[in-house]
Image (cartoon, rainbow, N blue to C red; front, top):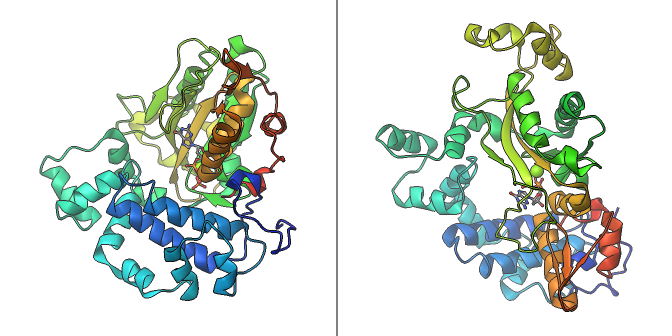
Length: 401
Ligand code: DGT
Ligand code: MG
């Protein structure tokens, strides 16, 4: 469903969060090209994300929410976010020589492959490229020659062929149902939401983001640890060394559930979260013998049933990235908003809140800096957050910036 503004009324001198950005829009051929230019700009200089790359992203955002297909360059000229470089792409109908050259360049192709490895960001990809590596096999050789990988990269390589496969929404729901089922055995009445792209209407994603809370704060503390322990016992999670180490890639629990800090340090928030990998559709008949002594038959059956794969019709096992996040109830609407995304929508919302209202917004809450001393502003739903920010409410489906 597209925003019903007529092109004449359309203004792009607004913040992205002030307009609807639906998943399906009219200018895909241009935004696809601009996204290639953006990725390329990041690959060329991952420290300069805020200049060239950002300009392409802004232009793409404006075109995503434009209520019709841009057919003439004069139309694009009305959009202040579409700079000259991006306009050139429109002039050339989204298939400029520049984009074609990028797509066929060894640099871009290699950087795309390296960036598809979980745990490998543009800086690492670039480092590997500069060392002369051109393929996953080259990196494997370097590792056998002693190059160190992070834990996440090790897992990223090990399960690369699985992790590049998109996760269909049905499977994400299936994973959420497993989490709900296991949670109910530890702590009844938890609230569980599938967040990330699925909540914005995407039918597939690169990972499964699940946000959890409970009305009673005392039930939230330590909940993630208990859940992860339980999931690990089910033998559903994979790890680097399933026999000795925790299988969790990253588990962070914040001591004491406080008010949440208003400081937003970098990309991460300080909610309890666990980055892990689930093995879905696994046949328990094929279980390694050593493994079977680690679990009771009952648990194995339960998992088999809940993954919907205990019958003779086994699907091929596939490893999926799952992020589990636990938020105190009071912070839940903010965490929900933050983890629903998109990243670009969040960026715009925070930018708007600060520049227009002097309000600091994070995944934990919001703080009014016009008020002395700084005052925390409460909200019990996403709608209330938008209301406090004097913004028209945007449904998650319209947050696909
Ligand atoms: P996908 O998975 O490819 O369909 O795309 P999304 O939109 O689900 O993106 P994803 O999974 O990277 O992140 C979902 C939202 O959660 C995104 O808007 C930003 C937020 N998010 C992701 N990772 C982190 C994190 O480590 N810390 C914080 N604070 N937010 C994160
Ligand atoms: Mg996601």
